[in-house]
Amino acid sequence: MIFIGGISSGMKEIEYLKTVVCSRCGAYGRYQVYMTYMYFSFFFIPLFKWSKRFFVKMSCCGAVYELDPEIGKRLLRGEDVDIRESDLTLVEDGRGNPWASSQTAGGQKKRCSACGYETQEDFSYCPRCGAALENED
Image (cartoon, rainbow, N blue to C red; front, top):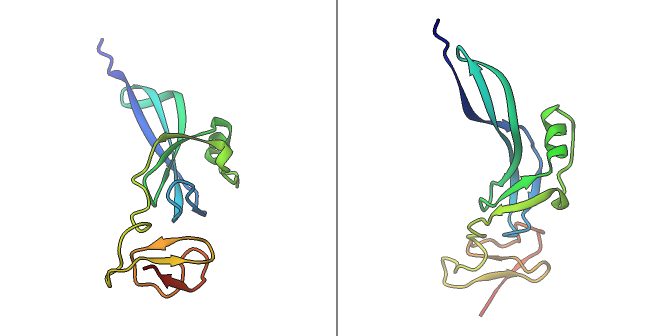
C-alpha cells in the first residue's frame, strides 16, 4: 500500500484595512498581516496545522514585526481588532522613509514646520498633517 503525505509550510494573508503612521519611517502605510504555519497533508489534503506565527509587514518601508499571537488569532477569526505598537515586536528593519531626507526636483528639501516631516516631492502641503511646507536652505 502506498501513502502520499508530507509536511510543508504555508502562509495565509489576513485582511486588515486600517491606515497608520509608521513608527519606523514616519510615512503613511498599511499593516499587511499574515500567518505562517506548518501542516501535515495526506493524499494532498491538509489534515492539521501547527507552529502558527503572525507577522505584520509595513507597506511603506517594508519593516516586519511579529504580532502578538492572541491578536493574530482574533484577526483570524474575523474580529475587528486594533493593532497597537505594544502588540508588535520588530523582526526586520525596513528600508526607511525614501522621502524623508532627499532633495526635491528644484534642489531643495521641503520641511513641515508643524510636524517636522521632510519630503523630496514638490508638495505645497504636508502629506502627514496638511500644514504648508517650507523650503529649507
